[in-house]
Image (cartoon, rainbow, N blue to C red; front, side, top):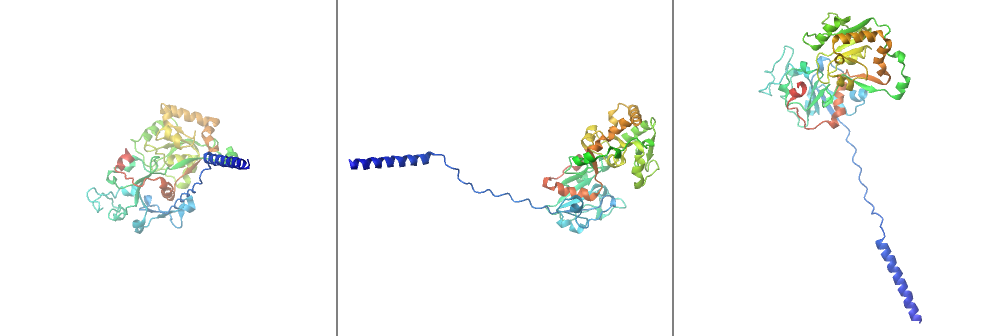
Amino acid sequence: MHSFSKLFTLCILLSLSSYLFLLGFFAPSSPCPQPATPAPPPPKPLNLSILLWHWPFGASYSLAGDPCREMYNITGCFLSDNRSTFSTADVVVFHHHELRWARPPSSSPSSSSSSPSSSSSSSSSALPLHLPRPPSQRWAWMSLEPPAVNGDLSPFNGLFNWTVSYRRDADVPIPYGRTVRRGAEEEEGDDDDDAPSARNRSCLASWVVSRYKPTQARAAVYGRLSRRIPVEVYGLWARRPLANRQLLPTIGRCYFYLALENSESRDYISEKLWRNGFGAGAVPVVLGPSRATYEALAPPGSFIHVDDFGSVEALAHHLRRVAADGAAYAEYFRWRRTHAVRRCEDWRERLCQICARYPQLPAHKVYRDLDTWANG
């Protein structure tokens, strides 16, 4: 009997241990600890050297210090106009105006002596096709002029990697100006009394023009409009040039400024709008790209587009009516409560933008047909 009791107890213990073993085997297990995923390495700090081959229109700026960081908070971007750094430059920028008279010849890329030139051009202003170009070096074509001014660009096909232009589809867009949203504090502190008004206006409309061509669309608009409203005309064409210090105060005396572009080209909205119109505090009457383009770039409700009217007579009637109605005129400045305009006039800022865009720029792009892209 005692032996049976021991045997029974042993069976119970074996059954219990088997149960516990099976329970542990089939119970859901805790996930195995995974090895820690290493964090991706931080991006390497930008360290780009930008060589400007020639200053646009001969007007140079100081490149001492670190202008991209000090002026525009863009780090790791170093500008130079010293051509001896060509072999080490990451990007070489060529402004188109200076290239127009130093075109590369179609037959011999190693020589620039046979390319068209003016008396003011020299081998120093030509493309450096005679120099060994580092494989990783990128060339950028820069222009703020519309197709009508560019001329034939086919001699430059296959030479450039990037475009630096006012065009929104450029590799590095550098518009003449841009619209920014004011912060909440700026909106709350905005004083409507500081906005331009109809008070103290002594002329209805003004226009500043130097390169006038009777075949341009703006010439036709001005001709018909000036027969219906008084337009004060300044500039070389009118033989009434204005010094820089006189420009904005003179325009600011007028209700409206004729911001008529010399070319109706895609995205081409020049300083005529950003500086002459908005800077002077006159309502811009614009002619250029489509209204949709102006709406995408300019402050909302800030301009009058010539194409909004079926005739110049209707435009003239609208200008007279708005000038006579202070409330209607003030509507064209309502945008100043919520938006501001930033003008880009310093070539150093435009060069620094190459570094700002660099991480998104295509590494192996080549403009095989620059002429079609720029002038098509």
